[in-house]
Image (cartoon, rainbow, N blue to C red; front, side, top):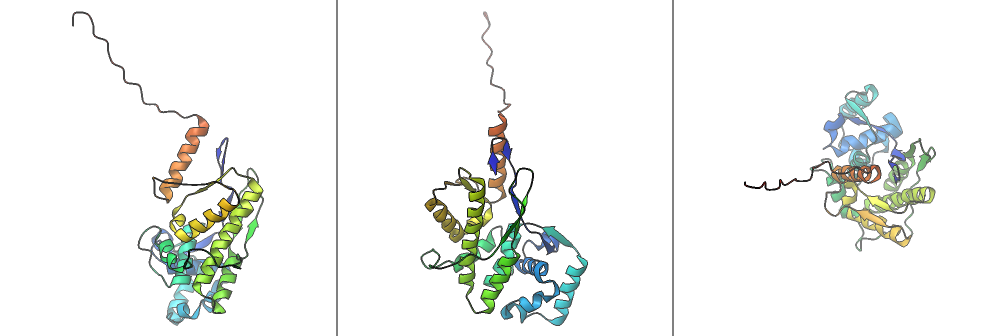
Length: 256
């Protein structure tokens, strides 16, 4: 959140174990297993939809359980990007991340024909643990969200339905933060907003609420835009100016 003294983090995603650490970046499946282990532990395999559970051999499941139980080469992460990669594996059968933001582009196939959510779509449950106060960081609990999403899939509701509910959930989260913090506007940054369905839907709802939305027009929406925005905020609030010296031209001396 930007304020007159700079910016501060007000909330963060609940953490989960990421098997393989940073090397799991291209593996959507590893992200999904890490998320589900956090919620269900060894019972995660019973919660997987059949199309994802059926190809797994008993030995492979045993090996995954040992990795998580011993936290072997596992990284603790709060990355929303890695979380969405896990969602991509759950909803689209996608296992490999070919480039940054790939998971979001894959999920474009789940947008409605007109790009808008059908009437009556409700957000998933989620929790905000902690207060949105100066000096504290609240935690976004996504566990109820994942449980309800799996329930939808087990009941035969399509991946497109689950994705549209996720979009509504993220609007619900944004709306809760806006109501609590009363910001003058919202900045979209991060490669998650490369997903057109998510970005357009959130932007539309915020526009209807009278909340201005700003997005990068020159830089990619990933970490580059976030880092540049943070630098510009510090420069603006701290009064930082360029240290480049003005060019000084020497006057001609008489007789030279």
